[in-house]
Length: 253
Image 1 (cartoon, rainbow, N blue to C red):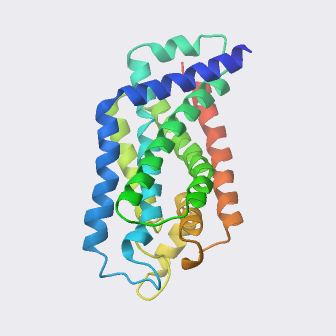
Image 2: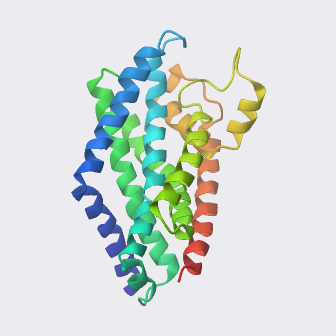
Image 3: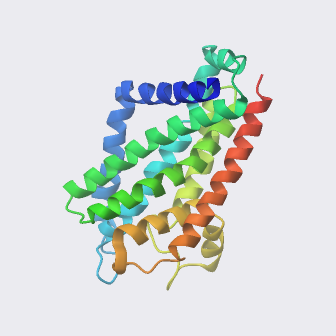
């Protein structure tokens, strides 16, 4: 019971921190809106898809981008907790490092899921049509995507000693993952270099974005991989990163 209580407390703490941070809440509204409106309008004439406009195409990609950036940024909470002494307190508490890691991971993943849901609301306001059933199916998929990405952020933060170092490493990882995931442009077809297709096949976000497109766009989208393969790759990535993250937390002092 103490492990479950510790898990719930850490999860609830991360949720409350997110809700009370008004700056982060405002940015969660603005950034996806800029991508959908400005980027969608600016590049809409350069990419043509049968039965789809470019804004519809990038909509699942922007959801993936929001999950990626939010999940990775959440690792900064570990550095804050180190600076203010909270991390030292929970590390010496009678709760296992695995539970501590899961508590923060579940809490941060829930925060990222909230921001991903906000993108769906923006999509509806901008006239992007999607089935409400598809939205409900996307929720567990989005949660699966965030588990591994949040674990990456927490793992990196566990080895960092300053906010500046974490910010530099985060950007170095985020941008390649985002731009090679197919969120903004197709990964196959005329003019797409073969090396990009190879690189994207090792990117877990590629499979997450493809899964979201498969569900949201339905018959209008030809998936890169069957849905079960996409979800299988994401689940394997989650398990590996949770294991790595737990190991990283076990080494913190």
